[in-house]
Length: 78
Image 1 (cartoon, one colour):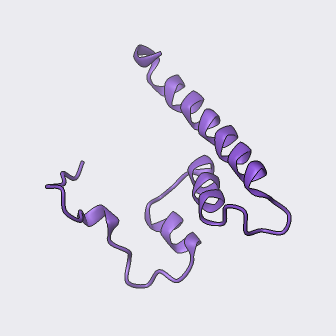
Image 2 (image 1 turned 90 degrees about the horizontal axis):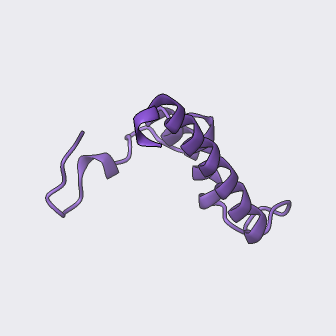
């Protein structure tokens, strides 16, 4: 795990070839839930098919799914 001294940390640096969100999702090896959250946050309220409330609900849905997945991997943390 990378430590930060309070200034910009290396984990915030963008890959030099990144052009789209999918490049960042792939670079960070995000799973489906995290990728959906990331995309929904980025486009919040901008997509014609999804207003801010729908995006917020989508984020909550995928966050709950990710928490459930992580808890299943770590039963000691329930």
